[in-house]
Amino acid sequence: MVQACLIGLIASLGVFGDQLGSLYINRPIILAPLVGLVLGNLHQGLIIGASLELFFMGAVSIGAYVPPDTIVGGVLATAFAISMGKGIETAVTLAMPIALVSQAIGNFCNVFNSVILRFTDRYAMEGKYGGVVATHWLIGMITIVRRFLLVFFAFYLGSEAVGSMINAIPAYVTDGMAAAAGLLPALGFAMLMRMTVNRQNVPYYFLGFALAAYMSVPVLGVAILGVILIVVKFDFMNLKGAAAGEAGMEVSDDDDF
Image 1: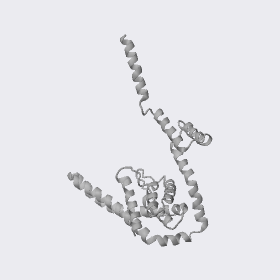
Image 2: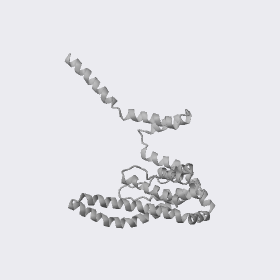
Image 3: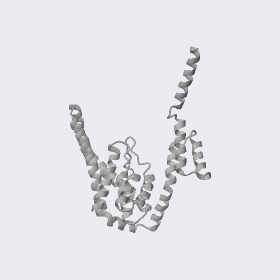
Image 4: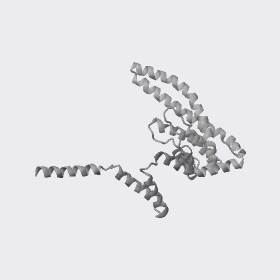
Protein backbone atom coordinates (compact mmCIF):
# COMPACT_ATOMS: atom_id res chain seq x y z
CA MET A 1 0.00 0.00 0.00
CA VAL A 2 2.86 2.38 0.76
CA GLN A 3 4.34 1.84 -2.69
CA ALA A 4 0.94 2.37 -4.31
CA CYS A 5 0.52 5.61 -2.36
CA LEU A 6 3.97 6.87 -3.37
CA ILE A 7 3.38 6.00 -7.02
CA GLY A 8 0.07 7.86 -6.86
CA LEU A 9 1.90 10.89 -5.47
CA ILE A 10 4.36 10.70 -8.37
CA ALA A 11 1.43 10.87 -10.79
CA SER A 12 0.07 13.84 -8.84
CA LEU A 13 3.47 15.52 -9.12
CA GLY A 14 3.26 15.23 -12.88
CA VAL A 15 0.14 17.41 -12.91
CA PHE A 16 2.24 20.41 -11.88
CA GLY A 17 4.17 20.11 -15.14
CA ASP A 18 1.34 22.06 -16.79
CA GLN A 19 -0.26 23.90 -13.88
CA LEU A 20 2.94 25.69 -12.85
CA GLY A 21 4.05 26.42 -16.40
CA SER A 22 5.79 24.18 -18.90
CA LEU A 23 8.11 22.46 -16.43
CA TYR A 24 8.03 19.14 -18.35
CA ILE A 25 8.00 17.16 -15.09
CA ASN A 26 4.94 15.42 -16.53
CA ARG A 27 7.02 13.56 -19.11
CA PRO A 28 7.79 9.83 -18.72
CA ILE A 29 11.54 10.50 -18.74
CA ILE A 30 11.07 12.34 -15.42
CA LEU A 31 8.32 10.29 -13.77
CA ALA A 32 9.43 6.76 -14.72
CA PRO A 33 12.80 6.96 -12.89
CA LEU A 34 10.93 8.16 -9.78
CA VAL A 35 8.68 5.10 -10.04
CA GLY A 36 11.77 2.92 -10.43
CA LEU A 37 13.27 4.54 -7.33
CA VAL A 38 10.15 3.76 -5.30
CA LEU A 39 10.11 0.15 -6.50
CA GLY A 40 13.84 -0.31 -5.88
CA ASN A 41 14.94 -0.48 -9.52
CA LEU A 42 16.10 2.96 -10.59
CA HIS A 43 18.12 1.57 -13.51
CA GLN A 44 15.10 -0.10 -15.10
CA GLY A 45 13.04 3.02 -14.44
CA LEU A 46 15.54 5.12 -16.37
CA ILE A 47 15.52 2.70 -19.31
CA ILE A 48 11.72 2.49 -19.45
CA GLY A 49 11.38 6.25 -19.00
CA ALA A 50 13.64 6.97 -21.97
CA SER A 51 11.75 4.49 -24.17
CA LEU A 52 8.32 5.82 -23.16
CA GLU A 53 9.49 9.39 -23.74
CA LEU A 54 10.24 8.49 -27.35
CA PHE A 55 6.96 6.57 -27.56
CA PHE A 56 4.96 9.58 -26.33
CA MET A 57 7.05 12.22 -28.11
CA GLY A 58 4.13 13.32 -30.27
CA ALA A 59 1.68 13.43 -27.34
CA VAL A 60 1.74 17.21 -26.89
CA SER A 61 -1.28 19.41 -26.29
CA ILE A 62 -1.47 21.88 -29.18
CA GLY A 63 -4.56 24.00 -29.69
CA ALA A 64 -7.74 21.99 -29.10
CA TYR A 65 -5.96 18.63 -29.37
CA VAL A 66 -6.03 16.65 -26.11
CA PRO A 67 -3.30 13.97 -26.17
CA PRO A 68 -3.45 10.66 -24.30
CA ASP A 69 -2.68 10.93 -20.60
CA THR A 70 1.09 10.39 -20.63
CA ILE A 71 1.28 10.88 -16.87
CA VAL A 72 -0.96 7.98 -15.85
CA GLY A 73 0.06 5.86 -18.83
CA GLY A 74 3.77 6.31 -18.21
CA VAL A 75 3.60 5.91 -14.43
CA LEU A 76 1.38 2.81 -14.39
CA ALA A 77 3.14 1.14 -17.32
CA THR A 78 6.48 1.59 -15.59
CA ALA A 79 5.11 0.42 -12.25
CA PHE A 80 3.51 -2.72 -13.68
CA ALA A 81 6.56 -3.60 -15.79
CA ILE A 82 9.02 -3.25 -12.91
CA SER A 83 6.79 -4.95 -10.32
CA MET A 84 6.32 -7.96 -12.62
CA GLY A 85 10.00 -8.14 -13.52
CA LYS A 86 9.32 -7.37 -17.18
CA GLY A 87 11.15 -5.09 -19.60
CA ILE A 88 10.58 -2.25 -22.03
CA GLU A 89 8.29 -4.26 -24.30
CA THR A 90 5.74 -4.72 -21.49
CA ALA A 91 5.82 -1.04 -20.59
CA VAL A 92 5.32 -0.02 -24.21
CA THR A 93 2.47 -2.53 -24.58
CA LEU A 94 0.62 -1.16 -21.55
CA ALA A 95 1.36 2.55 -21.85
CA MET A 96 -1.00 3.60 -24.64
CA PRO A 97 -4.12 1.64 -23.55
CA ILE A 98 -3.75 2.97 -20.00
CA ALA A 99 -3.18 6.50 -21.30
CA LEU A 100 -6.32 6.32 -23.46
CA VAL A 101 -8.46 5.03 -20.57
CA SER A 102 -7.19 7.81 -18.32
CA GLN A 103 -7.88 10.34 -21.07
CA ALA A 104 -11.49 9.12 -21.32
CA ILE A 105 -11.92 9.45 -17.54
CA GLY A 106 -10.39 12.92 -17.70
CA ASN A 107 -12.81 13.97 -20.45
CA PHE A 108 -15.70 12.81 -18.28
CA CYS A 109 -14.40 14.84 -15.33
CA ASN A 110 -14.00 17.89 -17.56
CA VAL A 111 -17.80 18.01 -17.83
CA PHE A 112 -17.91 18.89 -14.13
CA ASN A 113 -15.00 21.29 -14.53
CA SER A 114 -17.01 23.23 -17.11
CA VAL A 115 -19.70 23.77 -14.47
CA ILE A 116 -17.09 25.20 -12.11
CA LEU A 117 -15.83 27.48 -14.87
CA ARG A 118 -19.25 29.12 -15.03
CA PHE A 119 -18.70 30.30 -11.48
CA THR A 120 -15.27 31.54 -12.54
CA ASP A 121 -16.86 33.71 -15.24
CA ARG A 122 -19.42 35.01 -12.76
CA TYR A 123 -16.77 35.91 -10.20
CA ALA A 124 -14.72 37.63 -12.90
CA MET A 125 -17.69 39.74 -14.01
CA GLU A 126 -18.40 40.71 -10.40
CA GLY A 127 -14.76 41.58 -9.80
CA LYS A 128 -14.30 38.93 -7.11
CA TYR A 129 -10.64 38.03 -7.57
CA GLY A 130 -10.65 35.59 -4.66
CA GLY A 131 -13.47 33.58 -6.21
CA VAL A 132 -11.61 33.30 -9.52
CA VAL A 133 -8.50 32.04 -7.75
CA ALA A 134 -10.51 29.59 -5.64
CA THR A 135 -12.22 28.00 -8.64
CA HIS A 136 -8.91 27.63 -10.47
CA TRP A 137 -7.42 25.92 -7.44
CA LEU A 138 -10.49 23.69 -7.15
CA ILE A 139 -10.18 22.48 -10.74
CA GLY A 140 -6.47 21.87 -10.23
CA MET A 141 -7.07 19.86 -7.07
CA ILE A 142 -9.72 17.77 -8.81
CA THR A 143 -7.18 16.89 -11.50
CA ILE A 144 -4.54 16.01 -8.91
CA VAL A 145 -6.89 13.87 -6.80
CA ARG A 146 -8.27 12.11 -9.88
CA ARG A 147 -4.85 11.02 -11.07
CA PHE A 148 -3.75 10.02 -7.58
CA LEU A 149 -6.79 7.83 -6.97
CA LEU A 150 -6.64 6.28 -10.43
CA VAL A 151 -2.97 5.32 -10.12
CA PHE A 152 -3.28 4.25 -6.49
CA PHE A 153 -6.20 1.86 -6.97
CA ALA A 154 -4.98 0.61 -10.35
CA PHE A 155 -1.60 -0.41 -8.93
CA TYR A 156 -2.88 -1.59 -5.55
CA LEU A 157 -5.78 -3.67 -6.86
CA GLY A 158 -4.79 -4.43 -10.42
CA SER A 159 -1.27 -5.85 -10.25
CA GLU A 160 -2.39 -9.48 -10.30
CA ALA A 161 -4.96 -8.89 -13.03
CA VAL A 162 -2.45 -7.07 -15.20
CA GLY A 163 0.11 -9.80 -14.56
CA SER A 164 -2.33 -12.47 -15.72
CA MET A 165 -3.15 -10.42 -18.81
CA ILE A 166 0.53 -9.96 -19.66
CA ASN A 167 1.22 -13.68 -19.24
CA ALA A 168 -1.67 -14.44 -21.60
CA ILE A 169 -0.22 -12.30 -24.39
CA PRO A 170 1.38 -14.50 -27.09
CA ALA A 171 5.16 -14.48 -27.31
CA TYR A 172 5.18 -13.13 -30.88
CA VAL A 173 3.33 -10.01 -29.68
CA THR A 174 5.80 -9.26 -26.90
CA ASP A 175 8.71 -10.04 -29.23
CA GLY A 176 7.27 -7.61 -31.76
CA MET A 177 6.90 -4.91 -29.10
CA ALA A 178 10.49 -5.54 -28.02
CA ALA A 179 11.65 -5.02 -31.61
CA ALA A 180 9.51 -1.88 -31.86
CA ALA A 181 11.02 -0.59 -28.62
CA GLY A 182 14.46 -1.03 -30.14
CA LEU A 183 13.41 1.11 -33.11
CA LEU A 184 12.03 3.91 -30.93
CA PRO A 185 15.34 5.82 -30.60
CA ALA A 186 15.75 5.93 -34.39
CA LEU A 187 12.10 6.94 -34.80
CA GLY A 188 12.47 9.68 -32.21
CA PHE A 189 15.53 11.15 -33.89
CA ALA A 190 13.81 10.93 -37.27
CA MET A 191 10.84 12.90 -35.91
CA LEU A 192 13.13 15.54 -34.45
CA MET A 193 15.08 15.84 -37.69
CA ARG A 194 11.88 16.21 -39.68
CA MET A 195 10.90 19.19 -37.52
CA THR A 196 14.31 20.86 -37.25
CA VAL A 197 16.53 19.95 -40.19
CA ASN A 198 16.60 22.36 -43.14
CA ARG A 199 19.13 23.53 -45.71
CA GLN A 200 20.78 25.89 -43.27
CA ASN A 201 21.59 23.37 -40.53
CA VAL A 202 22.14 20.16 -42.53
CA PRO A 203 25.94 20.78 -42.61
CA TYR A 204 25.98 20.89 -38.81
CA TYR A 205 24.25 17.51 -38.68
CA PHE A 206 26.91 15.90 -40.85
CA LEU A 207 29.62 17.70 -38.87
CA GLY A 208 28.36 16.11 -35.66
CA PHE A 209 28.10 12.72 -37.36
CA ALA A 210 31.66 12.96 -38.68
CA LEU A 211 33.04 14.00 -35.30
CA ALA A 212 31.34 11.10 -33.53
CA ALA A 213 31.85 8.41 -36.18
CA TYR A 214 35.34 9.12 -37.52
CA MET A 215 37.06 11.15 -34.79
CA SER A 216 35.56 9.30 -31.80
CA VAL A 217 34.46 12.56 -30.16
CA PRO A 218 32.08 11.69 -27.27
CA VAL A 219 28.50 12.94 -27.24
CA LEU A 220 29.34 15.53 -24.59
CA GLY A 221 32.08 16.97 -26.78
CA VAL A 222 29.74 17.21 -29.77
CA ALA A 223 27.11 18.89 -27.58
CA ILE A 224 29.63 21.46 -26.27
CA LEU A 225 30.72 22.23 -29.83
CA GLY A 226 27.06 22.64 -30.80
CA VAL A 227 26.49 25.14 -27.99
CA ILE A 228 29.54 27.14 -29.09
CA LEU A 229 28.30 27.21 -32.70
CA ILE A 230 24.86 28.37 -31.55
CA VAL A 231 26.37 31.17 -29.45
CA VAL A 232 28.51 32.34 -32.37
CA LYS A 233 25.81 31.95 -35.05
CA PHE A 234 23.06 33.77 -33.16
CA ASP A 235 25.44 36.30 -31.56
CA PHE A 236 24.19 35.76 -28.01
CA MET A 237 27.24 37.62 -26.69
CA ASN A 238 26.49 40.61 -28.96
CA LEU A 239 29.91 40.39 -30.57
CA LYS A 240 28.72 41.93 -33.81
CA GLY A 241 27.10 44.82 -32.00
CA ALA A 242 30.26 45.52 -30.01
CA ALA A 243 32.37 45.39 -33.16
CA ALA A 244 30.01 47.79 -34.93
CA GLY A 245 30.16 50.15 -31.96
CA GLU A 246 33.95 50.18 -31.97
CA ALA A 247 34.00 50.82 -35.73
CA GLY A 248 31.57 53.69 -35.28
CA MET A 249 33.74 55.25 -32.60
CA GLU A 250 36.78 55.09 -34.85
CA VAL A 251 34.93 56.79 -37.70
CA SER A 252 33.69 59.45 -35.32
CA ASP A 253 37.24 60.19 -34.14
CA ASP A 254 38.45 60.51 -37.73
CA ASP A 255 35.63 62.90 -38.58
CA ASP A 256 36.43 65.07 -35.58
CA PHE A 257 40.07 65.18 -36.62
